[in-house]
Each structure stands twice: as structure tokens, then as C-alpha cells.
Image (cartoon, rainbow, N blue to C red; front, side, top):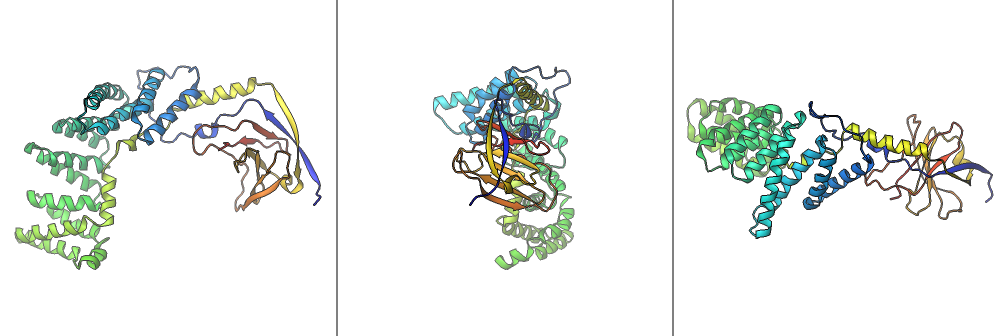
Length: 424
């Protein structure tokens, strides 16, 4: 069917815009440089360093610690004051040690010893960053735990507790280290850790069942207060446990409170142990337990500092400004595609290696494409909009830094920008 065409000039730009939209929004930005350290020096190629950093994140995510380690070591030399690099490097050594623990092959034993030595140096460097004290304390404790240095591990965890008193995970880990230690003198630290974890989050059912048992065994003066608060937390699972086991946990806790005042220790311990036994397998309690067990990868720094990111954007901007070669082509578009367009993004959205157009209008966003380079434009899909939008932006959502082979800018009324989308 014949229809009138509106001709739009499309300029194919030689220099591509690096993923500025992604880089300008740091995720979990690391802390500032140490006070005595210089600012980040001008980099030979900040974009390449960012790419290397992102590759190291992918390797960590895939548990390829042996590949991530040399990459981060090289970055640490080039970016000596980047907290993200030094944190991730220490973390890489730590998880590498854990992966080799329990093996007896000479090569793996030797590598584990080498990683322990490298971790010591990395932790010394990490400690110099004021905003890295929590991960430093946790990583140091995990190192001590790997070497069965329980007392030292507990001291590091106490540092983490002081820095983050609202987080129950650190005191809970302290309790686990203390109670599992062959050193009986650390038992008091176990109860101290549980009570601090409970104080930080009295709604955590996993901590509740543990602190009840340990306080009852130790005849702690804090047991009365714990029993008083327990009925509220247990109310969440009371009906479910009653349905499964025909046991009313709130009723048992109430009886335990009464036995405490009457000094009936046998009833007290029996009721508390029954409550703990039926509470542990509950999904809610298991979910609460997961929140208490911090994996080192939870502390992965996902972005370099704003200094490096700004340098990368500046480099790409300068490259664009110095590029002077333009190649023009004329493409015929249907009237309904170009009419009332507010903004346009260009990219191979359907992955057929031919550019498509994502067109923003007042009340909808529509995706147009072609099956052949000079073929007819057809509507791929569209969506209604219930708010006023002024821009459509295509970004590299999978963060792999792969770029389309060319960028396109449309000469539409108001000169809206067309931003490049990732080819994949």
C-alpha cells in the first residue's frame, strides 16, 4: 500500500558515545580516598580500566577467583587509591582461600599459603581507608577463622559490631565462632554475641530460638526479658506451627515465663527446647538465618569512584569533539513513525543487525524496525504512557560494554538526541 514518506537525514557518527548513562550512576559507590592520599591521577585510558574492573566483577560472580586476582592486582597498581579495587582484591584472596580449604594436594596447599600471605598485605592496605573498616574487620575475622585463631577472630568481629551495632549478623557470627571453639573460655563471648544480635533485631526468629536456649542453659538474667518479648515475635508463626505440630509456641513460652518465676528449671528448659525444635525448620526462621550469614561477596564494590568515572566520560567526550568525519544517508520513514516524535533512540533492538528506532511520543513509546537494510519500516511493538516523558535513553543494561558499530542522530524538529543501544 502506498503511503506518503517523510525523509529524515541520519548522520552516522564515527566516534561512539561510551556508556555514559551507566557510568554516571554509580552503584554502591566506594568511600573516598584516605586523607593522606593524593587525588586520582590522570589515567592513560580510564575506560579500559573501568572495563577491566567490570571483567573482574564478572569473574568474581562466576567464582573464577584465580582469573580475578591478577586483574585486580594490576588495577591496584594503576589505581592505588581506589577503595573498590583494594576491597575486591582482599575479598578475592579471601574467597580463594576458602575454596582451597580442606584440600591436601601439595599444589593447592601451597597456593592457599600464598593466598594467605597476599591477603595479609591486602588487608594492611585496606585498613588505611577510613570507610573500609567494616569489610576490613570482617575479612580479618574470616582470615583468623580459616587459621583456627578463634580469639583473634572474635576481636575483629567486636570491631565490626562497634562500627555497625544495628547489624545482627556480626554479633551472631561472633557467637558461632565462640560456641564452636575448643577454647571453653570463649563461651561467654558466645552468649554476649547472641544477646547483642537479639537486641539488634528481636524479630529474627533464628536468633530468638538460639538465644532462648543459651540463656536458659547459662541461667542468664536476660532470659526474663527475652521471654517477655518472644511472644510477639512468635505470633508470626504461631498458627502455622500449631497446624503442623499441634504445638502452641506462645502458650509454651507463657508457661516458661511462669516456671522462671517459680524456679521450675525442668519445665523452663523443656518448653524452650520444644519451641526451638519446632521453630528451626520454619521457612520464616530459615529466611532469618540467611540474613545472619554474610557471604564475602555481599561486600563486592560494584563501581569505581566518581573521579575515575568522570575521567572516562571526559575522555570519550573529547574523542567525540575531535572527530570530524561524518557520513550521511537518507532513509524513508512512514509518516506515522515520524509524526509528533519527541525523542528517538537508535539500536538493534531485535538483534537482526539492522538498526531500529525507539520513538517517544506524548502518549506512547513505539519500536520500529526493518528486516532488510533498505526494507519497509514496520511497527514491532508499542506501549501506552500515562506520564509526561521527554527523553528515551537506550543503555547497556547487561553492563558488558559492547557497543553498536555505529551511532545515529536524527534531524527531527527540536533536534532530539538519538542515543546508541547495545547490539546484543
